[in-house]
Length: 385
Ligand code: COA
Image (cartoon, rainbow, N blue to C red):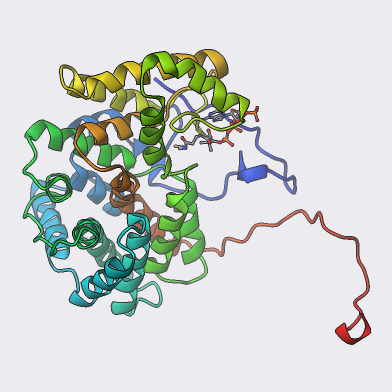
């Protein structure tokens, strides 16, 4: 089992911690990474094996697993939200797709959520019940926005949303065919593993925004912007770009050495919190290897295995979740540019749960900085310079 080792010693009060490493910045009851990853106390292993995204999203939002009746009702509410995107949001996306069809789907989601917030006149956190309703709306709307953008940016009319749980529906919408059950199961597992991870950069961004009294949509827009970066969610797309660039296991060693010589990070390796391996990568790596065995995608596994050996030997670094997730998405026939947006779809559950938690026990998030600029000096008005 992977464990959480302190990556940096906790800084003393008033001491600078670059990148906030080792800083405890708040409390959460949503997930814990101490020895194992747990969502609301449940170990990630069985949740990932079940691969039931709606079950996990409900757990994160409401704090308990749903009864079968609650599960069915929650799933139906998400489907309704996905199937009834506001026409004005679709029109706005259609306009953007006409002018910039090659824009990143992450930008389309960031803009799409902003437009949804504007249409909903979301200006401040409402009651807890209203926030839960908003969270459910977003959980359904965001995958539908992604599928709509992929249609519109390819010049196709927006297809209807399949009346299926999110894993099956989104996979069908993004691949254009009804997926086999084992593909839906693997995809569902990735959504569960991507759903939540305590105070990561995007979640912390969302919490910071709503700590000012701002609204849920604004918090989510900030989170999407943070997730886009390659050191965070953007890594899963870069993993496949890298594997394609290397091409074959024989090319792996010179390629890895080249990255080290140029002081470039290898995407899909390392983690701020897990210094002894990411439990999610171990779980998903096994699923990935089983899923692709005997298929054309198996070739990529030999290459991935070789890079893993080299990274461990040279730097003692182990893969993070993005490493197997990218290979699974590739094996499922998904285009690279939807990899990070799929992470958005999944993390929407963690983000909205954290926003509700922050609002429920709020104190403005406002750290200090250590000044390192000029010594005090006198101002001369422009006319005298
Ligand atoms: N490739 C090569 N070297 C890496 C590395 C990687 N993926 N990840 C960390 N390192 C190196 C660092 O450069 C550093 O080397 P140095 O001591 O010579 O400066 C050392 O390992 C320790 O890194 P650390 O300071 O603990 O990393 P961090 O906590 O600041 O950063 C990440 C964590 C995730 C940003 C970093 O590991 C990374 O950039 N990984 C690649 C991007 C990625 O996969 N992101 C998804 C994360 S889930």
